[in-house]
Amino acid sequence: MKRWVKQVGSIMIAGALLTGGTAWAGFGGATEAYAAEAVQQNVVTVLGKGEISVKPDIVYLSIGAESYAETAKSAQKANAQKMDKVIKVLKETWKIDDKDIKTEQFYVQPNYSYTEKEGRKVQNYSAYHSLEVTLRDLNKVGEVLDAAAEAGANSIGNARFSVENPDTFEAQVIDKAMANADLKAQAIAKASKRQLGVVVNVTEGSVNNNVVYGMYDKMSMETASMADGGAATSVKPGEIKITTQLYVQYELK
Image (tube, rainbow, N blue to C red; front, side, top):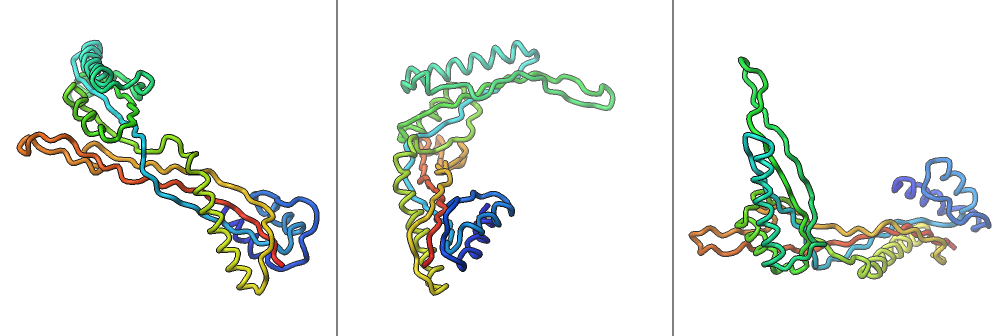
């Protein structure tokens, strides 16, 4: 799509004045490109990019437990006991609502060993249950993870820092993209010894909320050892980049 737009931009710089008919033929293949050239003369199309950096205000934590036993029932029972304790801590100690705790993954499966003498044989069974926990107070992330681990969680995976309502920043990022498009179009007009006219058409790409991923033992988390006084996990979420793209078509005079 980007390659097509650039080609159309170069084709449309020269030609007769913009005539009637369809003002925008879409971003299809070669057929649409040549059809657009017939009705869209003396225009230039540019891709404007906008980006802003904001502080995240929400994090999605992956907290789970895994247990092993000789039977599937025993493994599931042992793991259920662990998760009951974890959920109790999340709800009662940290006051996390039911709507912010949901099952992410759950399974019970056999684990096999293999020898030439006996072939494949069931070694044991594993039960796994993970939760996606939504937390809005980012100052408590490290403490919540530590409390979950103490309660029995032994599988703490990805944490996704994000912005809960990216729409509140949409106007800002669109302004940035439009300014970028204006700059590019002005440069093209100047290089072609033309004057830039009015905006003929604008098509917006999706606004992207680029979340920050990390792991419990990475992601700028520094877990102090007991020798250091057992300090809580320190979390530094950084910033989120919100981006968008605008395909802007201008008249050339």
